[in-house]
Each structure stands twice: as structure tokens, then as C-alpha cells.
Image 1 (cartoon, rainbow, N blue to C red):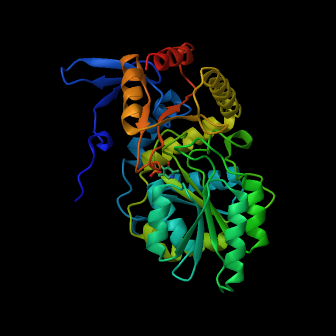
Image 2: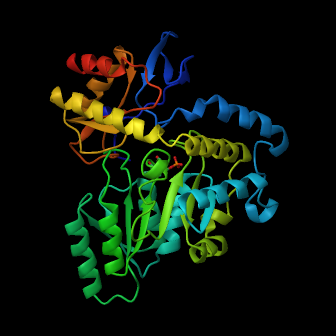
Length: 380
Ligand SMILES: Cc1ncc(COP(=O)(O)O)c(C=O)c1O
């Protein structure tokens, strides 16, 4: 195996929760703990610790138990599996929703359901690793279009149509890119897919719960609906597990043929319960996402005034572009010394020479956080 350069080595640290929402504690080598404000996790709405979510899990655990015991084909669907799937179907206006144990697995299942070795997949250059694993497993031919670039996507779709392939291509993108904070022009992309007869898979992992109409994600209400949506409960929903949302026909196809759905223990009832309660909270607080976006826009403006650059975006992920791995780590360390946890994202997670500090807003940040960040960044 190739030696990993020191600035690219990853370390596993013990990080516990503090007493306040969004407060984390890192255990140092000298056994001392340092308290940090969480600007790193994807718990955008603070639902991983929401008292209502915790109470609902406590009250259901005695009846539902912790785990599912087997795949849904063996021990069946628990009532909470059906409840969660039906609520998500209604909320997202999708005919069929199927739960998966993780977004990683759901993405593999999605690509494998929509593509095989005869398919050409046209994917954004920066899609999540799990989608690429799905592409590989499907045996499809992969072409990549420049990030969020409609012209390049159309060029690839056109050339695919000219080759006279009998199978419809599959286009893949994310609605909120996890390491960029950017969002593609989904309306235009789905129209292009329709024009060229392509299917369209969108990973909504980071957008669901916070972006789009009442937090329903950015595929909700598109003029041309997408073919399949992948969502996870590990981000704004604050728990774990995931789902695919699609039409009846493809839903049935997943049930009949997806190994990633069949050969796995069904999503744990306690995680379903957490996600179900989180969904109810998001539904009854439709302005949470809007407020987070307003706050993110304020942070972007202030960072810009201080000459920091980041890709254009609307959501709570602001990637401050640094460049070198070592510099990005230096920024992370200085922020930590100043009570803030924001992670230096380095290759291979992001392209060479584009290491960055991934700053993530959450709903429950103390009011002085932005100021604290600007002061800390000034010290680098
Ligand atoms: C865009 C994207 N898709 C999918 C996943 C996988 O989701 P999960 O954490 O539920 O496996 C992630 C999480 O890292 C992600 O960022």
C-alpha cells in the first residue's frame, strides 16, 4: 500500500457531548477536556438531542425493541417502518418510499436499480463516494459533467443520444453538495433529462429537512419530477438510516430485486421512531429551514467582507477554500484553540489542491458564534 502523507492521515478522536445543544467536548491526550462549538456535524436542526425525539424513542423502545432482528422479508415490517414510509411518501408527494439502513447503502441500491452494464451514467464530477460505489457495482459506463454545469451536461446527453444507445442514460447529482455547499439548477437539469429521455437520480441527503418548500428538499415541486430521490436520516433528521423515494413501478422493482434492500437487517425501530418524530417536528416547524438559510446568508456576507472565499450556496454548509492540506489543518487547529470545531477537508474527499475548512451552521448556535469564528480566522 502507498504511504499516506502525514497531512492526509485521518485520526479518530473521542468527542463527547457537552451540556448545551451544539456543545462538544474533546478528550485531549492529557485527559483534559476542551469544550467546542459544533461547526462540523450535519445535525443542522439539533434534532439528534431534541427532547421530543428522545422522549418518543424512550416511550417506544419497550414495545418495539432496539433492533429489527432480520430483513423485512424474514421478520416483516414493523408498524413504525410502514408509518415512516407512508408519512415520507405523503410529505414528498412520492408514490413509494423504502427504508434502508444507511444512505450509503440506499445510494448503491438506487444506482443499481436504475443502471446496468448497458447504461451510460452521466454524473456530476463531485458526487458522493457512495454513488460512485453504486456506479461501479452496476457495471455502467461513467461519464462526468463539470460541477453543476448545465451546458456540459447537455453536451454529454447529446453525444449519448447520437451514439444510438438503446438504453436511456442515467443522470446523477446531489441537491446540496456536502463538501461544496453548492446547489445545482435542478429544474433545468430535470427538463434536460426529459428532453433526452434520461432518468434522473438526486441525492437529497443534505437538503432534506432544511431546504426547499417547508424543508421537503429541492426536488419537491419540480416541473419535471425526478426518477428517484435518495434521503438520509443521518443529517437534519438527527438520527440514522435512510430511504429511497420513487414511483410505484421502481419501488416494486427495488423490493423484488435490490440485494441492498433484501440482504440486510431492516432499519432499527428506534431509529425509525427517531426519524418519524423528527419528521413531525420538521412538519410543524416549517420555518426552521428558512431561518437557517437566512443565518447562512448573513455568515456568507460577513466572511466575504473579511476576504474569505467559498463556493456560492444557499444552505448551511460554507466551505472556506484554503488550498493546501497543511494550511487547512492549521486553520482547523487554530479554530479548535478558539473553541470551535470545523474540519479541514482534504483529498481524496475533495480534489487535489482544494483543501478547505468546512463550516456548518446549525439552528441552535450561540449568538456570538460568527464573531468568534471571524476572530479565530483572523489569528491564522
Ligand atoms: C451526499 C451524501 N450522500 C449519502 C451519504 C451517506 O449517508 P449515510 O450517512 O446515511 O450513510 C452522505 C453521508 O456522508 C452524504 O454526504
